[in-house]
Image (cartoon, rainbow, N blue to C red; front, side):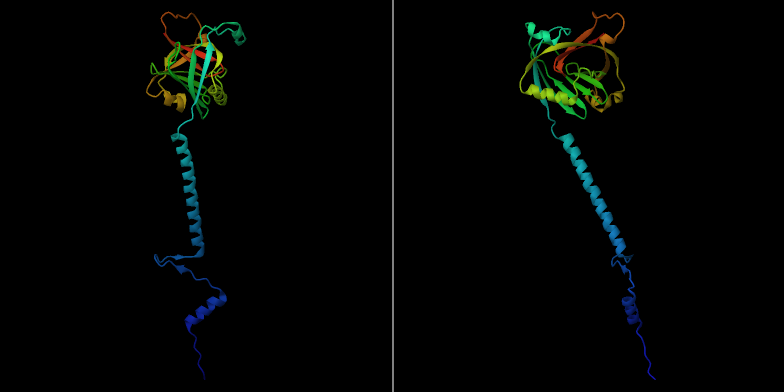
Length: 251
């Protein structure tokens, strides 16, 4: 009688080959069991993390480029004929100009905001100023550099050209000065503004740390107006095809 014995280890090995039984492997460092599916999941998470990192680098680089690179300024100049604001432009050729000053400015346009730098005038009167037109909030701020004071008024969209049109105008002016006419704007200082947050980011940044007042157009004020005791100053600038003399008066 012959006795046949089977090796248990060989039997399990054979069963694994024939039955295609998958045996989980252990991590040699941690001793934890992992399979091929866990490894694939970890690869996907790694790729996802890399994608987030690359996206952050791209967005961060764009922000750095936007806020730390020099802004492109457009410089232009006008010669204008000083005449009454009621006179039509067609009458300019029939009148001899008696005052032809030169107005120089720089304009910067970004995010629906136009910032106009009015330097000290070479001829005639006028204060140096920064003028900011916020087309999104429909507000205009005048920062008088001589007084160090800000004055805010609703944006006059019928006068101030949109940002792209302003750029086109300054690009034309850069090729050489040209002759235009002068109109007058009369503004009156009203109450002081203490809550700068209502002015938006750009005007708040321009007027930060400075006395800021709200203004109103004189034509909108009802009743008798006393001008003899007013303290007035003017800013000559152009934000359209004509020069504007903005007169600001405080009682």
